[in-house]
Length: 249
Ligand code: PEP
Image 1 (cartoon, rainbow, N blue to C red):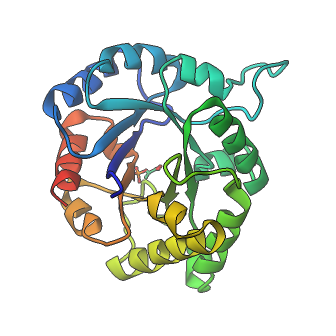
Image 2 (image 1 turned 90 degrees about the vertical axis):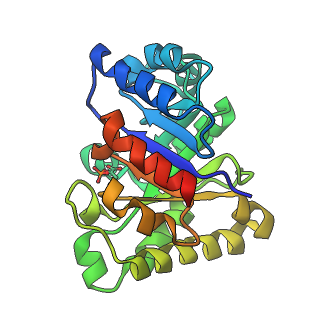
Image 3 (image 1 turned 120 degrees about the vertical axis):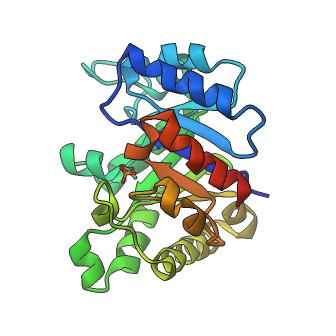
């Protein structure tokens, strides 16, 4: 059985005052069935891990360098993030791919570094609107899966987040049929490459304008094991009902 996962990505938002949101989630979800994850900015990671200690909320980083250490001014390695309290790292988010010109091979190298450091990886992928309209979604996903995911995964240490770029922060959400098609496709491709046992252990998250009002419908989809949530994860009062919907799914 895969444990459901509700992951909140704060992106470049949050200072000390926002740690209260983690405290609120911690209090509201004692005994949660789902795994709850917050990815605060790196500046808050350690303090967030102290606040979250002995509670249901775990911490993720939003990116890492592919190497262990060295002359890379401004970069942070997976070992350092783990030391600061992260147990997961989000990699290949479309904003990193766009803002930092990250390609599948960069994401794969970072994932290898993160796995080696003992972090679980959440690898993001998704199509542009023009690619969907041209009926290229599955080809794009196949390429990103093949290029971004390293060979040395055991299933439990990998989470794949399907995030159509046109749905991120826009309020637009794909239909249930569209999400189902992509998630079934990802599971099948993982099985083809890694075998049934590993493929069945990988959690598949949907991401893109998830809110309390659409969460129940999305979580009812068979191959959706949770969500990667941006905007609606910033406040506990918005994220909490999403976690509750996942617990009930
Ligand atoms: C995201 O950026 O990963 C995301 C899903 O954002 P939002 O929920 O705000 O669409």
